[in-house]
Amino acid sequence: MSPQLNISPTTFARLQQCAEPLVDDIESVINKLIDQYKGQGSPPPASTPKMLPGNPPDLTFTKLLSAEINGQPLKKVDWNALLIAMVEVAATKAKTGQEVADLVIVNRVVGSKTNNGYRFIPTAGISVQGQDANACWKAVAHIANKLNVQVKTSFRWSDNEKAAKPNETGYLSVNDE
Image (tube, rainbow, N blue to C red):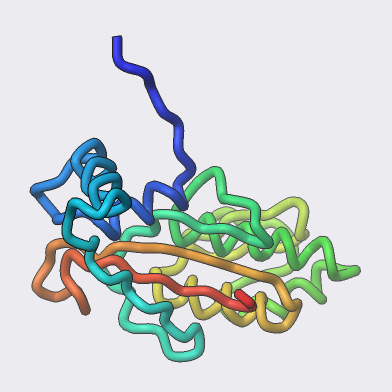
């Protein structure tokens, strides 16, 4: 029986950087990296540079692959889960639901609202409406900048001609020194 390995979402996203889409599986990527380490293979593709949070590319048709807030990986990895996690971080630093709401630049209400796509965040005392990837990232980056919170993400555009960079992996971070 082959040994099983558990890797973090961040490490998995890094492995994906070295993969040739629709050709490589995890084992072939690891073998390529070992060959490169031993000087026997060609180098993996250059990694995509980090993109600036203030001017990110169009995130339509992207899937979040990994996300960390202050070094802690998200358990649920999608754009709206990242936004909710940032609102929860804001709640730990603010004194009232209104102070949290003032940091959130997407549709939100103080108190509980669960219709029209709103989700109540009990720890924050506010409800936030679900957003697309672009609005989520804009709101996450805003909160992170205001509160000096570190956020790191990796994502992949789908194989869609309308995607900004079909089948490419991207990275966004805030306060990543």
